[in-house]
Length: 353
Image (cartoon, rainbow, N blue to C red; front, side, top):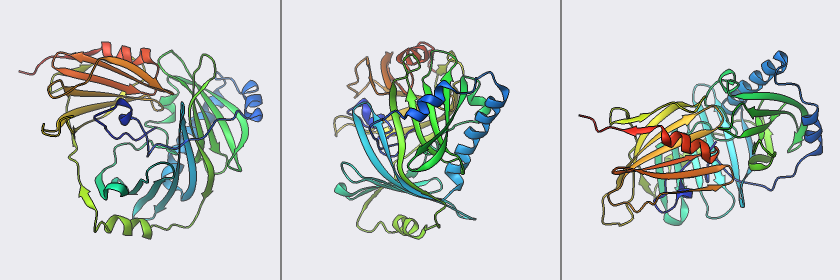
């Protein structure tokens, strides 16, 4: 669920920091806790079908509804709030504005897949194509049926988020390769209001995104967004090259040893070298998803690169760095560290002839 900006100096610069995010301290709701105890069994066909329908509605609502609001993101000790405005117009697609409310100002304007990111302190505007279509309040990279191939659903009952009646659903992993999720969905519209990533062993909340205020069904007001994307006078406009890439043709093999994960995209983008006098470093990225959690595999040459082997974590997000011959492999995802290790063990390279 998240939107990464590659940063040469830190692994966590790759995390879904701004677009995915904002944050708030979690408070367990007694109603939801009681509903958990009374939740419908995952083996109940009716409960399973209900969960599938809710999951499919979440994605449709995020794309098709008009809504404005403020949401917060929490990952470990990191907390950030953002303001969002989303409009779905007939014949002209989606318009969206996302603005950070904490820290340095950032604003993102989007029309369909055209994304403009404004960095005021540098008078910089980065223009690129959107890659992550699963950012909050969207959720799925696949259908509800496919998600439930690796998660067991529990329909927990009702609750309230930001003053709105919601349906609570929990998705428990069928194996140890992924975390659990709890979702709060607007009972009327299907818009996702809150999502939590949980440690299935103890129920600890690892990270959370939640609306603190939201208005659904507001009139479309695309004009300021469209005008902002046109008016870049006085800004330094940068269009970083991004291209699709066939990593298998380059000699990389990713064996599917972790159930449920499918490759959803492969892209190449340049990253600035640590030494400003060195040329940009080409970085290839393969993204795998099970519909809720995602794993990114970054491949970059060792030359002009000061990467070191190691691992780390922040909230639900784990990172693993390994060297493979003349390449650094960085694995990043909202999955347990053992999942990244399993991915890493199945990566092979054979130089193409």
